[in-house]
Image (cartoon, rainbow, N blue to C red; front, side, top):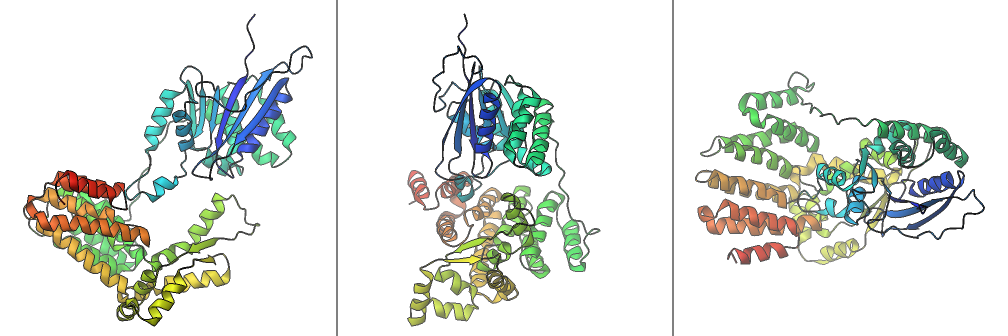
Length: 498
């Protein structure tokens, strides 16, 4: 006689995604169809640093009075899980890492959309985990891997991702229940039945008939489609005066800097690029691509004006509403936690006034004391919105600010170093251009990155043409690995560049 075994299901979901509802649905599905069922949950530290793990076990025979009541486990164990449901791709990766997913046994069902972790967002460089690599490894780890963008499916159906996961669970065919039994479970819940059924159907269809991903085409603005005369002239200049291999990057740079400031600022960007391209060594293709990209990024540095502008845009309000699944009839408050340092205040002022306020005197001390406590601004209120609106409107005076003067000096110094290196070693010049990656962010993050960048530039100045491009690349990667400079310090010691 073959001993009966429980069906073991682990659900990894972040806050607000309905993981608890999904676990309850599975329990209700089992109990209503002759199964013993039990669910437990272990909450994570926070919504993104650790998802809640819901664990469900189903055991047949509840409808038979002779079946002894089983003792079911409270937590999933590595190598002992039949089904893993993950509401986001990184959570699927965590399940694989923890050993919940095995190629001999486990069906893994996961959404392919990403909610970036704190570590990914705060990395000095590009800290994002490669989604394709995650999907590849998950596919190798699981017996069956069902994956598609469930967040998109939830939005299309007007429901939440848990209903799509429930449909994908049915579509996987691993549970011994019919479609009508699944759907009756949703109906018995009595909340959001119609949208949940639509999401269930979409999830079931996607799981049963997975689609191959399609390549997306990137649309570019051309002089023929640009409506503004000044913008059209800038785009025509890119096509006329710059090599083909940098057109896309240069057009993106123009678009970014017009959005950041105005067409005149984008014209300055093209002037700077053209100047280096015309110098000796400036025709190197790799150097040209690096310069076009990183100059645009630096010239659109994040100051208080830019931060305020981004926070009050219609697209941001709509994105937040979509993220919390708020409909048009619901009220939504958005609170910004602001903690500007005195440096940000001084640098937002006109150069002379900002320089004066930066000096240690009674007003400097008063303002510094005021900035020691953070403030909360509700941008969804009229008062909070107007505060940030007025600050964003100051971009008309950005060129007069202390921050603009400081950034201009830094950019010109960096370009000078690139131009000098290009005359003898374009490969080294390319590595210098890419050092801009270290300078990013806002407030303390920007200060630490700038400190590391200045260390790199001191090394470039000290060693000049004797500096190997590979060594500078290694130093730069060390600076990106640790914003506090500890890894950079170790790398300098290893390369004997102290």
